[in-house]
Length: 355
Image (cartoon, rainbow, N blue to C red; front, side, top):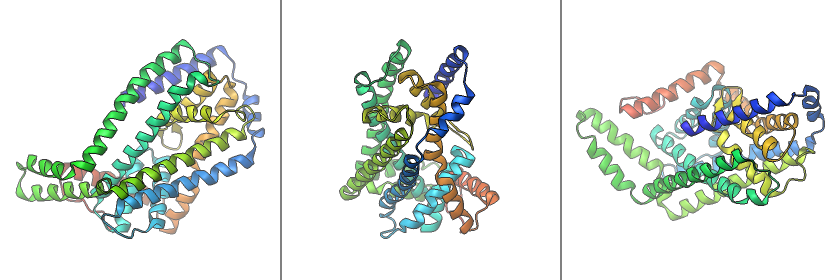
């Protein structure tokens, strides 16, 4: 979290410095939208929605140890509703998706929270690989590095190495030592009253069951393949977005990947209904590294955010309304998911989502 605050602060400072010395031309900003090739944006929208279905396929792999034949379409609907909740409610909406999947597939919520953690680890490793590629290739790209960015990249390189090591360690522990971890955790909580200890033991067992996909070689390979497919589609989406803008149309693939590497970290900060660090980082990278005007960089950053995050909202709302979930119920669903997570952490009753 501290690293995210530092990155966001740096991006805000960079934009302030740029706007302080350069007048923002609102006419140029508005006209830049008219110059976009909306055919490429339409393709990017289709690819963006497809990534959500790819996530549903990957989640189904993690669900199979508990449900041999999971309903991929139901998982996709829960994914669309969950991402819509993130856009509208902010990061607390992340819990809506595992809550809905647990409800639809009739599995313990703790197992789906474990699947969510496993998904985050897979995506984080992919982001680290992309960012590592960006750092290694940026000298050979068309990007123009200043002293400040050189310092940021040097510091970021160390952070990437540490995060990658931690993620790999966690995945190895889940794959190789889940049984030992389960036994040790349950034994360490032996001081609890019998009723609560049994509850916690079931919760820990269900959580470990949610990571069972890492213990089977075939499932682990499918997780890797679906993660590669997911991020391949993300790269394709960004390529289409860059093709839509005259100022970025000639960017090479490595330039697109460099951009994704930086923006992926900014996307972690999500303000309800507004977005967050993604737009700030996108503007800074386009303007400072690639010399794109601040007006065009800002307009492209907005388009990137809409296609990457907001495109799924109409679909998610359609699924939510079809299932009788309105705004009030969506907020209630978020609160139920948060309470269920808090109960899980405290070992209290309330693990299972109510039908």
